[in-house]
Amino acid sequence: MDAAEDVDICELVNGFDVQIGDEGEVSGFYIQALKNNNGAGILLLPDIFGWESSATRDIANQLGCFGYNVLVLDLFRGNSWKEGVSQASGDFEAWRSSHTNIAKDIDAASRWLKAAVDEQGHAIDPNSKPKCAIVGFCIGGGLAIQTIARYGSITTEEEVPNPFSAAVSFYGTRINLQPEQIRNIKSSLMMITGDLDPSSPVQGCEDIVALLDDAEVVVYPGRGHGFAHRPKSLEDDEAAEVAFSTMMKWLKRRLLTA
Image: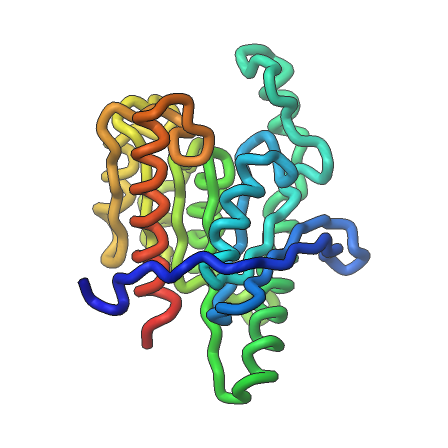
């Protein structure tokens, strides 16, 4: 195995709450590796259950302990969907449509993360150019793709420049992009889904990847929605471990090699 393919040993991390935005109106949780910090940043977008759910925090800690600086964003400003409550009602659609600041908050978090890793990197090496990725699960996976498509179309200095060299979407939902919008994507893209997931169908993922030069879809047979971060069986657990390792190797090539 090539050295760039290796996944390093997990080390200890430090995590703390941060306030983001012009008036500190957006919350986040920032995780830094204590011993093996590689300088790269990851913006983590959670599923509908929000930034404080144990499943999301577990993923953030795993990413952090392998050396990444991870910002978990409170996408829903304290109003995440409650676990155990059915989504098969009009209440869910009303809840979803009530969050009108998501793109703005992602922009604020993107700026904050890039500034944080730049400051950290430049303190060690003034010539360093740390890279960032955006990773999302479910609704966060769809938003990750929408974000890099939006950033890829930026043409004016007043808008947020694209800080993301790479993006990983785990079974992203409701991506809702036209082909011309997808073609704007300039970040490397990995899409991960299961072939039993109607919320993130394989064909839809393949259609997106087919429009891009640096993109791939990884399909896990027999796996449904949420298998990688909310496993429900031993088979899900096994597939989740493989999916995480696959992501880590892919991110290492995109973020940590010249």
